[in-house]
Image (tube, rainbow, N blue to C red; front, side):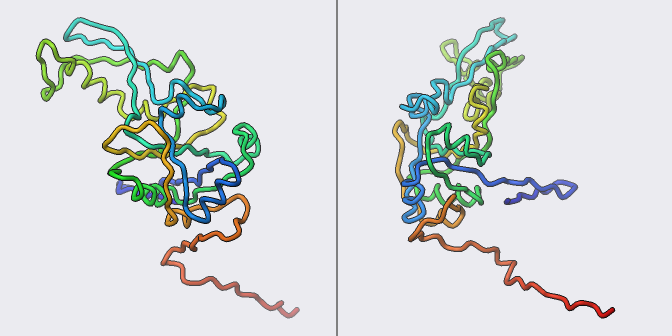
Length: 248
């Protein structure tokens, strides 16, 4: 388990657990031999051929809006992911999840930050991204109420501009639409990797990233794997010392 330290008055650590990528054995072997990996898109998840994996609301979040300065209210949907690749994993290592996804294998990502960075170097134009757990809500909690009392000073206020309304919506919604899902998917305990690019994407992308292999391990050994050992430079050796029985 990896850790992140924070420069706060007290030395807190954030523990980053390993995550599980459930796929068929053939694709596990392909990854550990060549670094080949398929990244998906939000659109693909909305239209996935597998009913279990399909979520027509992927990348969408509802909101209700009250804007006192304009004396108006309403609602809408914010949609994200038009320029993002994604990899879906789980916090749970379980045979039940393998059965749910109808796959016979998986691999574990032990160092999620270095894995994220390695993959980003193989995606053209990728300069930023996100990682995090999904937020699960029931249908009554999916819509988020937003309230604003003033217009941000840097937003156009022309009569034909939607900037005064949409800018604070974007600010208040923040990253939530990237991670929000219905509670019916909560059993998956999803942890997702998101890579942003400066162009529209709609189809999954297959990349080869052998340098990411060292941060992962398969559920079963893969013959011919090109995995390189990954060690901390602070640990140079381990010795087990025995002891002799003490005389009576």
